[in-house]
Length: 137
Image 1 (cartoon, rainbow, N blue to C red):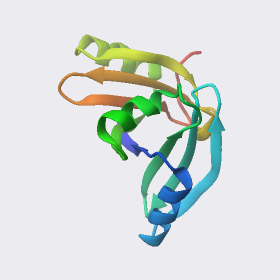
Image 2 (cartoon, rainbow, N blue to C red):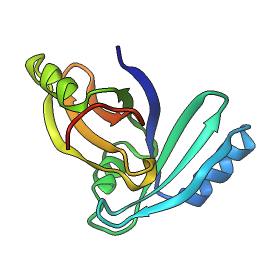
Image 3 (cartoon, rainbow, N blue to C red):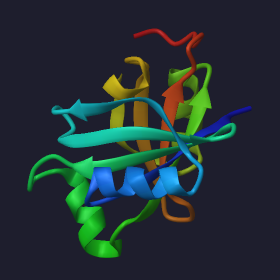
Image 4 (cartoon, rainbow, N blue to C red):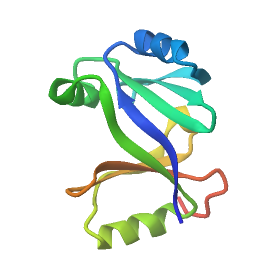
């Protein structure tokens, strides 16, 4: 079984979004991360057991800009925590999911591996390997 890790939320202005969520009772979870490889700034925000990942573009060619142009500031993916990344990707691929980004380390999530997949019926999802994941590199 997989469980929700966080909801990914594209924002144009990371600081403004952080401030708004602070006013709504959220707390920062960890430090802001600049992921230059993915060209995004990331700040996790916690509301009890729930996490929201605020993602903003670091440059004009950031992939988040495409999302912002299409739908504006908005949630755009659900991230699921998995124990076995390879097995989950294989199983989801058999169910019609398309791998958009193979598993690679995510700076903002303790360098745990993440992968992005897409399905016409549910849109974009992210998988994050659990801290005790059993997948091979």
